Image 1 (cartoon, rainbow, N blue to C red):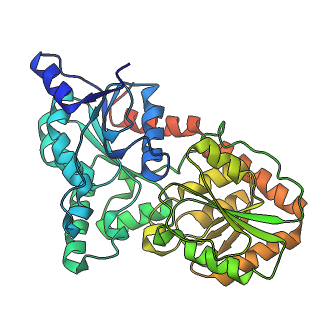
Image 2 (cartoon, rainbow, N blue to C red; image 1 turned 60 degrees about the vertical axis):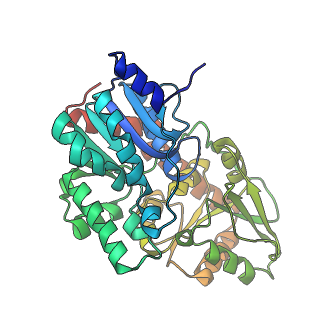
Length: 387
């Protein structure tokens, strides 16, 4: 069965007089078959809207039947190219944006929307939605002030001209209003959803050991280095062990640490299974990149129903306090993580189970796929792009 349309096939169909059409066109300069981070969030958005309206996808892979796969290389090698790859992908996608005659273009970062802002919108008079998983300018660790200023200026140009911005957190909404002058009314906050049928609640096992879990990658803003330092601080306490649930891109060496294990999960189901083995879960993010993103792992943590030790970045304090399901600590402090783990251990199993039940209840009330779908459809209704 054909599951994707290559760009040559799109050109052939257009020449035959039958250009593919859609109400919403998603521009995804990544492989949607990846199940973590932005690709996962993008796929959840696409799947949620596909149930109610006609959608098309332009991506690097994994878009499913009818998607357009653009074989755009990672090329260049220069620092400028590395930071502008999403924009380069979208320029390549511009001819297909025009052919599909969509009512709206939906992207997952600011730079991907630049071609739509410059050329697609003036001709098609459609809406541009930027679902902002993160800001390149906030994640740049090198490149110097000139390159950083250029990327930031491009992001500002796009975001001010988008019709709707979906922010991942209230902290991101505040940052966009302050740093880019975006009116708050144009920024809709939608927290990361979670599939509650995959990330199910299971009461933790009764064991003599407190298993502390972490899920995600080891990018600098994730705070993995603080997790490892915490493991060293607790090395003399045999009733505490650590489990890292990671993807295939993991680079950090854990072999030198005692009672620390890593499991590579290839699917969401495997991730959910490993998280359910834990008693406490960590989200130790830090830095500007973490403060303007939503910690996607947090939704999974809440859904499986475990107490969370989280740093005071993004909306973690808002969510943990509302759910009454964990401890919020300052970012960048292994000592604070260790003290929070000790506190949860000493409070006892019944207290941890109660926190986990409240976490699951919060996920059911605020982070379900049904709630996510309703929020997206309501936004598109307001833009005049109805089902």
